[in-house]
Amino acid sequence: MSSYAMLINGKSVTTSDQDPVINPAFGESFAAVPRASKAHIDEAMEAAALAFRTWRKDEAFRRQKLNECAAAIQSRVHDIANVLSQEQGKPLSAAMGEVFGASMWFSYFANLQIEPEILQDDGEKRIRIVRKPLGVVAAILPWNFPVILLSWKLAPAFLAGNTVVAKPSPYTPITSLMVADILRDILPAGVLNVVSGGNDLGALMTAHPVPRKISFTGSVGTGKKIMAAAADDLKRVTLELGGNDPAIVLDDANPDQVADGLFWSAFQNSGQVCTAVKRLYVHEKVYQPIVDRLIERAKTVRVGNGLYPETQLGPINNEMQLNKVMSLVEDARQNGAKVQTGGCRLESSGYFYPPTIVTEAREGMRLVDEEQFGTALPIIKYKHVDDALEQANRTHFGLGGSIWTSDLQRGEALAQELDSGTGWVNHHMDILPFTPFGGAKWSGIGCENGPWGYKEFTAMQVVNVKK
Image 1 (tube, rainbow, N blue to C red):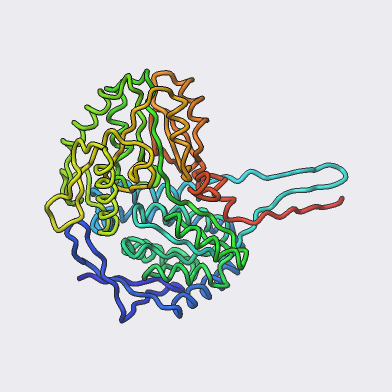
Image 2: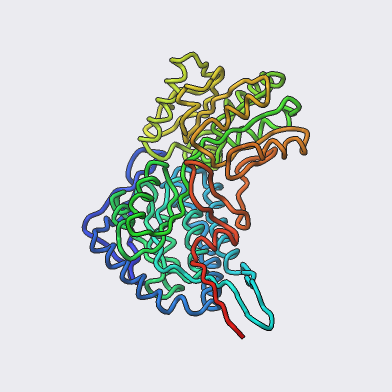
């Protein structure tokens, strides 16, 4: 069984205490990672604080290093993707796309031009805004996209001049440790530190006196705890939390044109995407054709081990999440919904659950009201679009949402009626390095990506010079 090392102050660190990592395609461990202690956290924080003193001073040097990071990750795409498929479960092609994406994020921020902010420059005064790094950033990662979401945090934090202590999910720690090892000889010691272990490490990092910023992607419940803990020290936070994204199909949508896009917007990465379509509202005029095409697609998609070339959907990442998805579908079934296809765990030691289409769903069913984060999609029929919008917005979540229509002007207007950080028209989950990404309501605070995400890792200072 392979073992891996943490990165602390530029050195590989192992421990006698090891945690197994489960391959969800088999439900068995295939590797082990170190279990960090409080002493390791203290050491990583101290190293990051020391490195910050010099790292913050040379922006040109930081940009050079970001470009080198991008190239180094791209040169190891196959190695990282192979392990990513095993620890997370996603198909190898999707894993490769994720690693390429991480490289692209580093490259984007390496070359992001920050426009000067001049408020006054005349014979009397020169007043400008400068962006200064915050210090040490504690980055806490989820298990659904461990590689690219690591790059979302590292790249803008590094560009701004911060140093980072990162902790991956205990379900998917290996690829973060691999990336750390790849970047070890590029970045000065202490600029990047990656520790592995249980969820208790996140609490230690959040409460630690050194970090001035916490960047977290994960559940609403954990995000609330992080915000409460950060308040005591007035740490800055960026929280990208859960979503229960609605998609609304209008009466003028062409079922043949939108069905495939709807399916993959719901089931990409086996539904384990914060911004996946998790509730589908379909106008009664096109309801049955849409349902029929989704059922047909669900029955033909190939579910299996992510390393098999024919696989289109992998397993659910962990047994706890699998059990949650199954319980939500069963609750809907018992409350009058109809499971049209899927609905039963596949016979395997792995955590496989086929794409499941549930009709006659309604508000009040847990499958509709909660974030399932898996391969199950409730479909709700509606008659009036205002009612669909009201139902879509009647939730604590507000990450993303989409409108599907043949009338782009109408779609754009309705997308703005969604209480969400992003409103798409005729597609969903389109996230790019240069577009800000964040949530409304319980789906998060702050944003990531683009110059807006960069600014989240900075402190604003006004420099006022009297001439």
